[in-house]
Image (tube, rainbow, N blue to C red; front, side, top):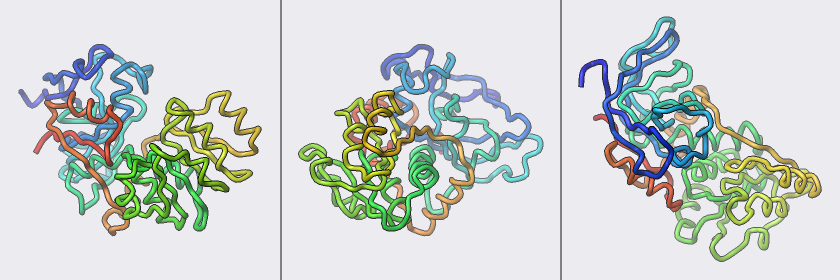
Length: 321
């Protein structure tokens, strides 16, 4: 490869993991206010495989498509006007979402202020596990729900990438955290700060809890009507933040009838929040869980692993040394 090309995972049609192909493509160049980042690691998220299949953010993409929004790497070059970063800076970010960012590649360009300095205590593989999942958790728990000390917060799918951050952020704010996950994950979730755990495989949460202030639902109605069932556990005026499925007209009507509030949510790039999150990580207040890493060439295996839906924390692709 020349200095003008790079390896990247390309998609030319929607489908299964077999449509993910590592090819040599043209390396991007930073525009004014952008930086070129050499990618060391890229996180794999559910939205990646959903988009690959033609769901998720597929309607916003064009072919050929390079998937991936979670990136950790080193600034290689800065465009005109950039004063906050310099070549050699270690950064992490979730650029461009929901537009294509091209994270499954050796290089990525994006506006400088969509990046933040990588947590100093993390290697690139663990840093790449943070941005999309942690920003989703932060923006739901802090910016949308405004969780306060003493509130009771239910987090579904708490052992996943977003969930394990949401548990920690809610606990950091002083909330009483109730987490749903399979029984094997309960000891770990309690280490992260969950006060109560519910085994979703044996117990329906609406049968054992009530008067909840906030539900962060990371499952959605597509799976066992989880969002609709969440309405039953909220106190009057409580808030359901529906993350994966959004808010259907039926769910909105049910929330109104139940006298509770409802918020749809989609994550967005946020460099300042990533700076705050990096501080929490470096202070030891937030842990990052990476279940497994795969080299870029095994991206199909990584997708299949995440798509199985049993991941503890995150799965990450290693891109460059």
